[in-house]
Image 1: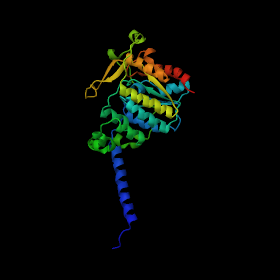
Image 2: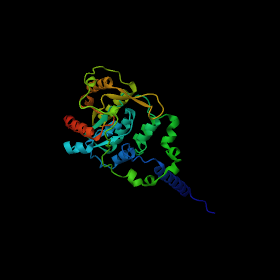
Image 3: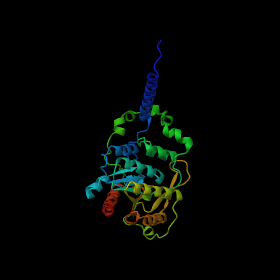
Image 4: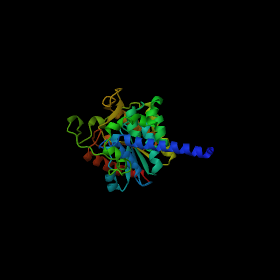
Length: 327
């Protein structure tokens, strides 16, 4: 029997490896959860960003659910003519926001990156569940790979880089939505990243008509977490390097700030505390660095997830304010 040429053997092996790789990618794409149910429809929000026309956005909003519940791109464009997208994820600290900005600037050349700052004092490494919900739907590339490496422990890298090892057991949970790949991954997000929240009936989550006196009169300063400041400085340096304006925004939530509580469950992992002293320190940092900062707690009352009425008011105010900082 005639011996097979080396080049042909190599070609066959490469073809086999390629087929296995493509099959693995297809199976993984089917098995991965499709987060499409509002308001936490991260798959729709993140994948929808890639469906925007390249270099078509004036502003890209980055941050946690605090920003995707508050900024309404449709209202902003209607009132100011500025096109925008809320490219955000649940419980997103600066150590993840950095890579979201890196990814955003790969596809867009905006006038400004607007970073929401509710997590400005979060220096701990985020929980794996938070990393997963933020990076699962981001396209594979430099930002996603470095984001995972810098936000997870080495012993868990397998579950992030070889996603099938995490989701291989979801066969029994599959439904028609999991098979609708086009709807999940290749569809524009109609609200450009904004999520509708209804007004809560819970009295504890209601907000008044005016800013609380203790918020307006707070002059205290509390030192921000060193690691959080490190990532904020890296974000500022990245924006400077890419020649894009960085703007810091605190959406209205009556001055609360999110901090790690040490709990293991989703309900116990974070706590909301009075954060005005931290936001004052953040304002000092922004002033020293020459970064525009709008703390909307000083402007209007709010809550951690603003309803549509308050979101429209906040967006209108921000739209009028931000034009002074855009070329």
